[in-house]
Length: 175
Image 1: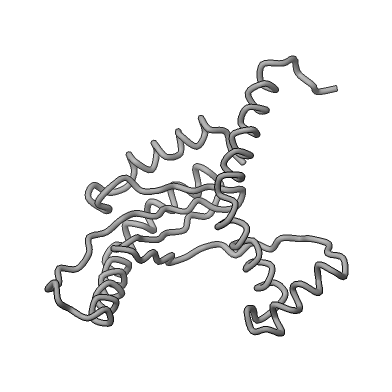
Image 2: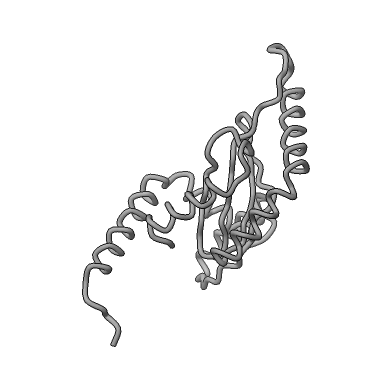
């Protein structure tokens, strides 16, 4: 985790470094130990009001693909600068209408030790066709918790930030 101030500095750097007009609004910047993810909103394709859902979905998919190809070199240049500066990989994504697409993202291994009852939960998800492997099942579980625990996770993050501030005010703990 990074401090709130570091996150603000990182968002500010991206706001200044991203090419003018790349996104319709300020990009959403998410960061963890391995990766910085930049997601911005792009314009929806102009369509008649009475088009089918299938046509609308295909148009959005086409717009996202066009954006990805057209902006590749600009995004690579920004990513190189950011990766050098922040020592993290940079991943990209866009929002177009109600759709979000991530172009690249880090798939970082997470080491864990699970007891048999926990492994059985994962195996049940695999057997039920929810996931292809225990790894996919674990990722599915994390997404489920994330979706249902946003408030709790936000509160926890704020608590961790408060702990960092208190520690920073105290004497050096180095022995």
